[in-house]
Length: 408
Ligand SMILES: [Zn+2]
Image (cartoon, rainbow, N blue to C red; front, side, top):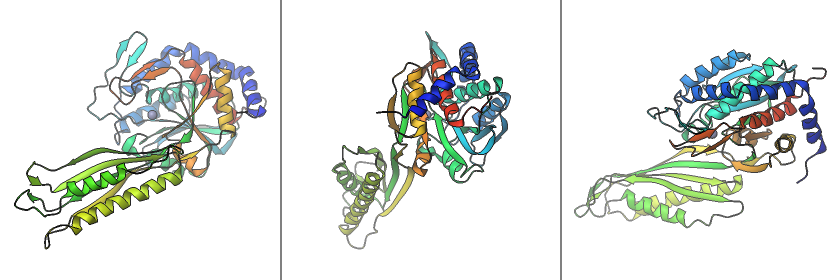
């Protein structure tokens, strides 16, 4: 894999620029302050569809750090601007406000050696904190850039949030159509560069019928039997290894008693592929199998009894795609990672970057330094040691894209 010399040159020039060196020193000298901010942010609950409190707090912190036009948009995203010479096109640097944890989760911080333990401390307390540290480094050192940088805390990145915040940003918000590149800072790490968008579709399927006695009403359409047929067909789907494709029936429920024909049966299904074509194929197969299973059960039911009803809801839809390895943004990220003596690894995941990637806008997701584990569990931990390396890497990529203004 070769990287165009230009990205290398850009990174090398940034490394010797006095303002960049001053920003780097700030990341080191403010390490404790940055960690304290991370702890504060992570202590504010931000369950799916309940990010308002954290968004308000984050808006005030972005203002405090010296950014302008800090606001919360119609979707609930928090936005603030670092103005460059041109107002648009923009570079967006984002992190997500939401966590996977329900509102009642105990967010109390615990410590174990250098580790901080709290739900959401890394995902994405780490990214949100990085945004503040980077904003402050730009403002404090009066770094002049050509391209304006929009800092965004997004809502709805996790699970059923279905990327609604970033979708709004690109499709409907006031900056829609003006965003030229996108960097998401999500979690810890220094090596990973996520340039591939792992697409998924998620469904909730509900079958309902009259229900009755298992013996006395035998012959009524049975929603669990229909669901079983649909699951059996899906389980036999020949998902390709390349491009990698997967499916999962993650939850099933229904019925009330061993000797009652159920009134309802439901399932939640997750379909994924790195290829949009394969995802579309799997999705079509899945919907056809559900419909066939439903029709079969109705076809064999006793005459003159009510049929089953079917509702199939798409509850998640994330596009697939890839920012090319040889694009400027990926080349810069590769060079910046190497410049910090780390070995870059290209990855594929489902993040806020899925949305711009599907629109053909250069986008990547980076870890924001330090190390972490047990994400999406209440045992989540973050270790801030050497976090400054992740902040430096992010800053190099940001300034490589936004371009230091000549003479600044
Ligand atoms: Zn995340």
